[in-house]
Amino acid sequence: MRGVGLGRHVIAELLDCDKSTLDDARLVEAALLEAARATKSKIISHYVYRFKPHGVSGYVLVAESHLSIHTWPEYGYAAVDVFTCGEHTDPWAGLEVLKERLKARRISVVSMERGVGVAETEKATATV
Amino acid sequence: MRGVGLGRHVIAELLDCDKSTLDDARLVEAALLEAARATKSKIISHYVYRFKPHGVSGYVLVAESHLSIHTWPEYGYAAVDVFTCGEHTDPWAGLEVLKERLKARRISVVSMERGVGVAETEKATATV
Image (cartoon, rainbow over all chains, first blue to last red; front, side, top):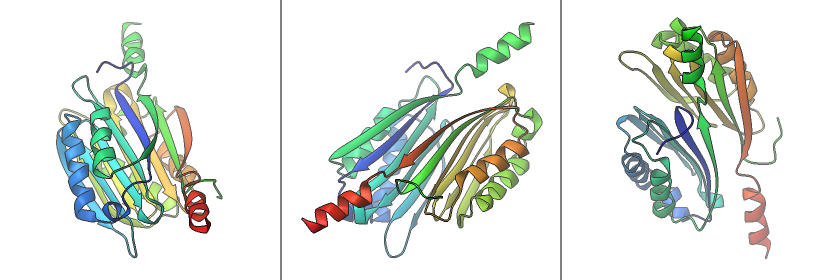
């Protein structure tokens, strides 16, 4: 996927998800790692934390940026970010995995290009 | 800071930063942790990784969501996210710290409310 910037950041609101899945740290962790692999990113590190009384937060640092999730099982809601760089990655494939695994019935997405024009500016400066 | 959603996500492009700072994992780590504290969030876990030949990625998982950074020292650019929930937190204070510590001369910011209407929907459903 060719973009105009260094990376693509998909910011998604996953709504009407399966509440018990959202509260299960093992399932969230598995979904997050599967999503990272689906983007074709290289996993460097990850961390998942379960809150009391409910909610799970997780993070996967990939060589190409990151994936993150924060769940509110009580609302059936998860805040998801899939941010990947490079022409070989596809953040949308990661989002698709999370949407399926968390059984989201509604979704709202904003996609942003990150680092737009940054490489070009540098080149322009270098040639002055 | 009162918002309309569960959290505020500040997405920032830090431009014309100090290149040696962007490539120093210890400085980036210190800036990220200081930024997390400035938001009044509770730090749960953090991880910082330095790439070869250059670049640093880091995140701080906080009880109120997360902060993340990915740097491209060669372009003087850092992609920063400060996402915090709850009325007691201020993501802008965290961004200010990162901007100062990385010596960003230009900055481009998008601020998003996350989880808008999620709690209200749940309440509405519950009262039906």
